[in-house]
Length: 367
Ligand code: 13P
Ligand code: SF4
Image (cartoon, rainbow, N blue to C red):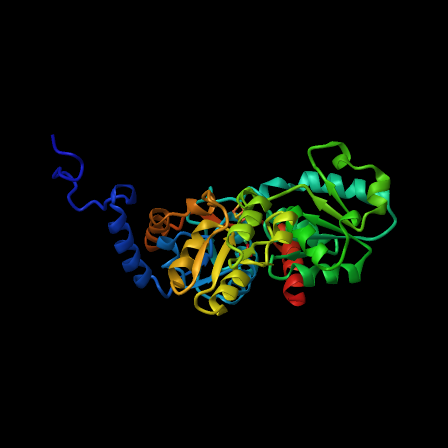
């Protein structure tokens, strides 16, 4: 019996992406990208797989991609990253532009650790415990509704590239800081700025009143949300210690989403862009153990063969949600644009977008 493609019933029917080989997908993507180059611009976060990143017109960390999005003028922005990044791009681009996330299931487990209902409840409780002004700062890794909360409550967004400047600004606006959803970026940055761990408390949304007594809120300078990145949790102090003992010549550089203990034990910490630049500018022959997502670590190792670059963890620290964006889904999104029936459009509602934009613009004005 003839299968669908061998039958004579519809010899010219296009083959769905799902039936193309990986090579065919890449070759069709190259053709379509060229054909639609005046309509589509592709953004790619550093954690994307190589087969996807090769199609990116712009690559960057979260801050750079937000800044890029603001300047784009093509009608379609294909965002190869995760949901909150595409939402940010939608907020910063014009109403006429459409932002597309090639796989709508590409989320971020950390962003999912804070929601608007929990934040509203926490905010009311915290403000009932103190007369001091609390300034809310959210890491960009969160839903648009939380960016809007921050915009409406005198706060700002930050990324791992500008967290220090944003926190400095926050303390010029009030006496206390609520930092969510990533406790680690909040703790690591505040500690770097000289705030002691004793001045920080953790609010756990899964516990009554966050597990805190009113006097703890009243005393604290920084209230950290109990959120974390499951990928960066994979790096441990034991891994750094063992490397320091066996191979002291290796530089350990990690992302500030790693725990405080890991960041303290490492030689250096910074955003994905910081890590890339640091290794790029290092002399040939230097050795680097890197504590961040594996696609970026492998890409660095390939790009700089004159240096020894490997993951700090022996296990694969892969961001599985970033990895959901596959060339196949990218192709499906390109084909849909070509057919004038775009799919996977990310649209933040008008009111949320307006409040979020206030918070994003505050951040972009700070740094
Ligand atoms: P940056 O690229 O901004 O350092 O962020 C890392 C990250 O986890 C993105 O989700
Ligand atoms: Fe989210 Fe962590 Fe993946 Fe970044 S690496 S997108 S914080 S889950």
